[in-house]
Length: 161
Image (cartoon, rainbow, N blue to C red; front, side):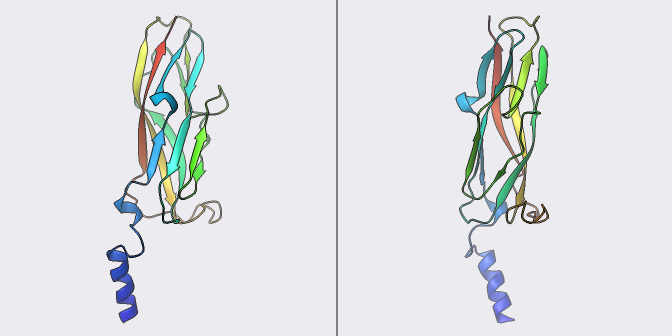
């Protein structure tokens, strides 16, 4: 009984490291601050860096879904280039945008869009946290009630001449 009480006290006071739900351990950024320019009919897009800031060596993240808050009125937004990465503790994954194959998000301008049109907003990245490599546990070792399940990064896309 005393050993069990000691274990609970150690966890409550952070002796084994800060729990996942008490700190921010995800960093999500885009090159160039998320600002890009394109021409009529061109497909442009964003790369990304996702960093798992967990230094305890415990928590893995799976970046599951990306969505946008903005309105892309003169073109076609597309999140299909996002590859749903898994990031081990203390590691980063960087992906450079390549049209129709890699990156965070892409947008194809309409041929008839007005030069100078600007769309901006935030990309939202939904993540799931795991207590080990999710592939090794068949994605069943999820962390219950983590504080941070979403990260965001601002973007802007301008139609040039």
